[in-house]
Length: 214
Image (tube, rainbow, N blue to C red):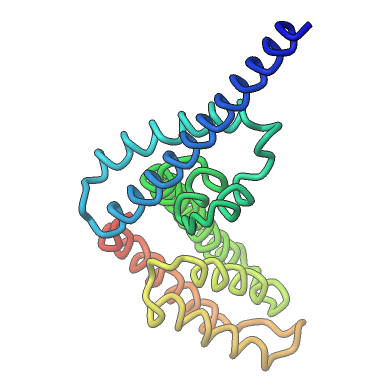
């Protein structure tokens, strides 16, 4: 009976010892990640070195966190309990789950995709406005929405300067149209001038894109 009790006690000790060993490993991973994040921010290590080490730490962390999910349900609470003060590590391991370099690449790709979509939108709005004038759609309530859409898409494209020709010309035309009645029509001279301004702005827009690094 006493031998059996000793065996139970030994098993309990072993489990407890394993738990604290896992705690120590978790503590070490969090501390190492905090140091790595600070080293990366301060340019002490290269991006490639940082990414390789960070991927390893994240992989170890995920495995260990999964093992400890019952005993350590909250990593933030674990860090508070042991007064770790490692906000960068918690962000990287718990919130982000990927190295900062991967985050930056994803953000850049998303930004490039967004810019490409807005460029396509601008081109479409330019062509629609010019084609509408060619089809003699010159009433204010026909022209105004087209120029408003074009102006809005140009303003969304951050690679264009605030004083870009297309922006200023569309703003001037929208202000002019706003003073007219919805059923009023552009004169032949006004329609020709607007078409000229649209064509000129479109050419400037296309020329500006390579200079903006698109």
